[in-house]
Each structure stands twice: as structure tokens, then as C-alpha cells.
Length: 124
Image (cartoon, rainbow, N blue to C red; front, side, top):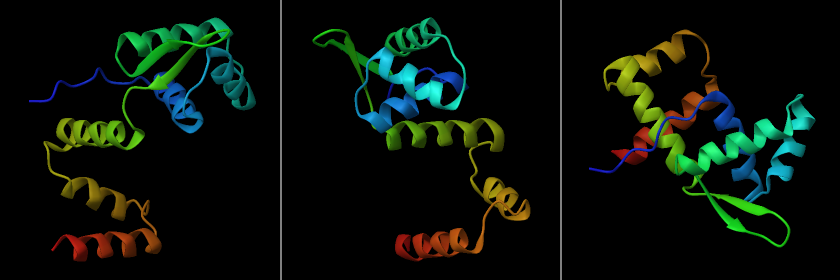
């Protein structure tokens, strides 16, 4: 069985999204991206990136002037694991109640529904 990475907190996920988008980043790079969205302390970003390295979500290597962090796994792989975990915890492993909830809550528009239909046809 695959070893599972520790769950990401909301702030950790925000950091990971920035690093995924950049491909690799220093703490300063991530800090500057955060500052475009909201106020955050540089030390908070540094702490979060160190925690993500300890949790094995990021890898760190020495750059010319600062450490360079890169994702340990592709975004798609991490998101897939997060969704699988969520469905398992909330819906006892069944995706059907999740899809029903999304459709009934009007969170899925017609374009999304058509994409789901296409994917279902291809999987048959």
C-alpha cells in the first residue's frame, strides 16, 4: 500500500498552489505572490515551506543565493489523493453522493455536466 502524505492545511495548500504554478520557488518568490493576494509575514511563509518540506510535500535544494523549493509530487497526484481522502471520510468512499450534492446544489453547470458525460462515455 502507498504511504500517504500528511494532509495539507488551507495555508499549506495555498503555498503548494503557488509553488506548482511557479515550478520551483524561493521563500521570497512565494511571499511576493502571497502579497498580491493578502497580507502575510515573510516568516510565516518560511515556516510553512519548512513544514511542507518536513511533510515531504516540498523538496529543498541550495540555489545561488537561497534555497529553492520544488513540489515533491505533481499537483494532479496530490489533488487526486485529497479528493479520494475527502470522499472516503465524508461519503464513506462513494463518489455518487458527492456528485448528487454538487448537481443539486447547482455547483455543476451545463458545460461541466457535458464534460462528465463525455468522460463517462469514454470510460465505458
